[in-house]
Length: 419
Figure 1 (spheres, rainbow, N blue to C red):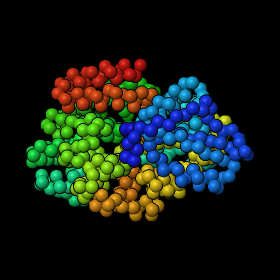
Figure 2 (cartoon, rainbow, N blue to C red):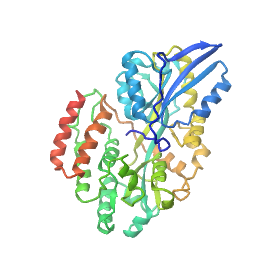
Figure 3 (cartoon, helix red, strand yellow):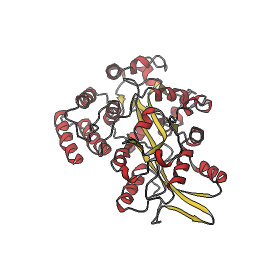
């Protein structure tokens, strides 16, 4: 759920010593701050905006990863001061922000009119009580990445068209995993139970909470069904049992530890970095994902009410999230745009990825973005439940814990987190 940009691998926590968020006029200029994390591709865009608006001075506070950025965000929200004029919010933390939406400006009220700019599911995720809390930046539409050479060795189709049927549904995906394991010589089918479970879970209309913020983990049959399917695959040897983002997981891309990977658009960069040049051409990406579409990652720009010049901040945020600017950000850092017009831009559709066999990755993921049916509603502690309850519970199963006992532990821990 949480987007981890492949470009940023160092934890670079920017010291934000200012007590207020800016907006003050100095030398005739309105000074505005924008707080981001990972790589948004805004460095040149901020200079471009300043050149076109000489009355505005923009300062970027940039944090290396999403977690420290949001920890800082929530600390300053609680303190009532210190937030930037524009704050980036990653979708994994969006539920916590939406539960405190009164601290953010309604962009429909103070910002430029930009109705129809985004994919509906991207827009809907930040609408509450008729108010829009954020402007969408990037997204992470899901495809499936796989090792062509390992598929060949197991006697499976390996070309992008031929594998589509294997990835049509979760049933076909796990059934193919059984076939692969039988002939793989010890190579696992997927990297991590939690990575697969999270992708399955996020496809459902109702997740851990219903829209009244009632915890429904025990009463939502889809959650137990996903759990049963994934832990069943673990029992059959399909998982490499690697905790995502660990050193062992990173090394697994290079050491043939697993054959498939749930693959948002930004994961291509992760695979290229971790698998290394010696594996160029071995990895492929299919224009397919089990049970339709899904999204993992992406962010929004918000305008906190702490700021002194919210209207100008909203204008900047709207400009940065316009299709033209998002295409420039895509060229700069590979952030995949969420704007309808950007998804038909030749600069996106004609872009290729040499590491994955010169596939037209932009066009492929533009099609995958259209397959996402809806944005799942996220309750106040949704991200915590995923990261601190279900992911560890699934890892415990991979490490030998009884599946039923792990489920009971997950239910108990979920109730604690939700309080």
